[in-house]
Image (tube, rainbow, N blue to C red; front, side, top):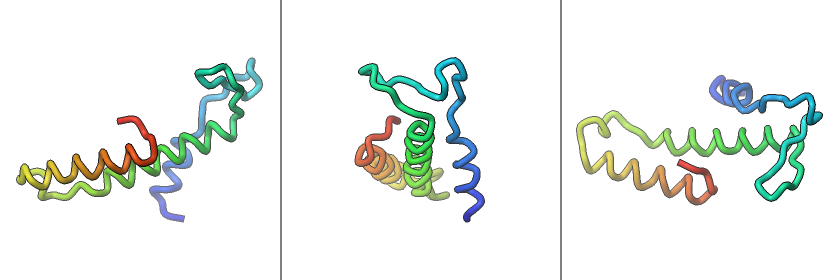
Length: 84
């Protein structure tokens, strides 16, 4: 497995609320278990990583390249419903 993916796996592990016995709540009050929290966070990190991978050195010097990066990065995140 790619080292960056291993880092994302570690980064995506939710903080455990021992009193709630590994359960959190969604906005509507529905229960969300620990594993689902992890999968959701991991997927979000993968999508963000993909969007950020569009960055090139040219983005530092070219307004057009920067605008293209921003447009495509935003489009990827919107497609998967990941907040900016």
